[in-house]
Structures are given as structure tokens and as C-alpha cells.
Amino acid sequence: MVRKLTREERRRARVRRKLKNRAGEDRLRLSVFRSHKYIYAQIIDDAKGHTLVAASSNEPDMRKKLKSTGDMEAAREVGKALAERAKKAGVEKVYFDRGGYLYHGRVKALAEGAREGGLDF
Picture 1: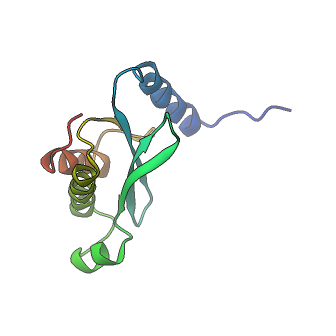
Picture 2: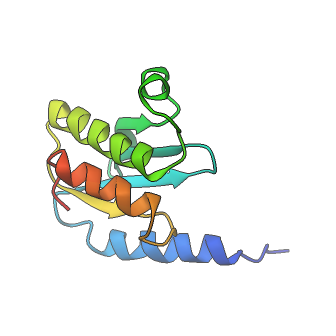
């Protein structure tokens, strides 16, 4: 018996499918996951199946620096930290995979922080 996908899973698959259609270009994927308490981001090379760079508000140094780990300020700082680490790894251009989340609030703040840090998407 085949399991029916939830709305969230269908939305996530739709976003990922659109990104795969543009995969011929030389860009990596910036993937976002958010929970109620934290936000996570990673840059993934889908051709090799490797995560090159990752950052989250759950890291010890981030938790010390931030007042709260689940707000828009934390998301912006995670985006800046990810962009800084990506620059060191030689990554400049990425696709933004919002993971089925609306481009609003913490997801948008993370994207803006990554742009401020120098990532191009």
C-alpha cells in the first residue's frame, strides 16, 4: 500500500523539483529547516550528495551570543554565519531551498542574513 503524502511533503517536493530543473547551472543548494526552538541551514552539493557547510542556532557559541535561539534575530545571525563559512569554503552562488516553508519571518530573515554575508542567490 502506498502512503499518501502530507501537504507539507508535497510542498517540499514541489520546491525541490523546481530547483532540480535548474540544476544544470553551477550552483549549490542552501537548505533551511526550522523548528520551534532553533533554525538550521546547510549548503549541499546535490551532485555529490555532500553537505559542504552548515550552521544553526543550536551551536554552543550561537546560543551564548543570542538572547533567543528561535526568533528572527537568531535566523539572521545563522544566515550571516553560514555565508561566512561558505566564503571560506569557496562557495559564492547558491539556490535557496526554503524547504516548503513560506518565504516569511525567520526563513526570510535567514536569507537576508546570508545575502548580507555575501552569498548570491
